[in-house]
Image 1 (cartoon, rainbow, N blue to C red):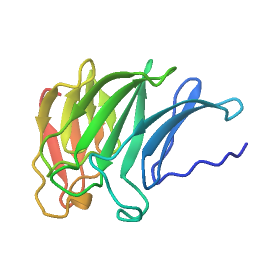
Image 2: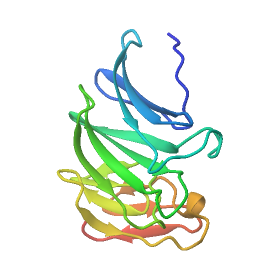
Image 3: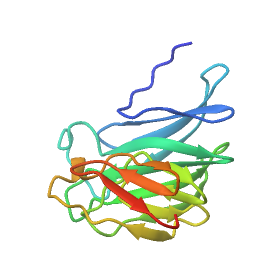
Length: 177
């Protein structure tokens, strides 16, 4: 089956749905599609932090990360491309079946970007931060080591109570996750 959906991220697959994001000059949307026939089930749209002119941001207000799916929740990050200091990274927990926002974590620091998350032991790892799955509370975060925020952090990997984060340098974070 083929259907048209644009996006720069990897789709995520849950029990019944496929999740993918795409952007335009005026909004960026994540959508759920049924795995059986590709029919759109829901969409969730994020508007830019402030008014922008057409074409100002390379045809995108921001970029969704790939998603992580756990039970009945889809976790996805969004990096706002509106000019700083207004643009902010955020992570959303959306109900897998309806797209309803369960919680949202907005990082009020313009030096934070989020990447495709990984889930382990009740924690959501976004590359530069660890969030509690239940409510999005920040458990810890890393400061970007460079002015190149786009490449500061890569999507994390988790194994044997260690979080590995690539990017401008490789970090291994151990201890209680």
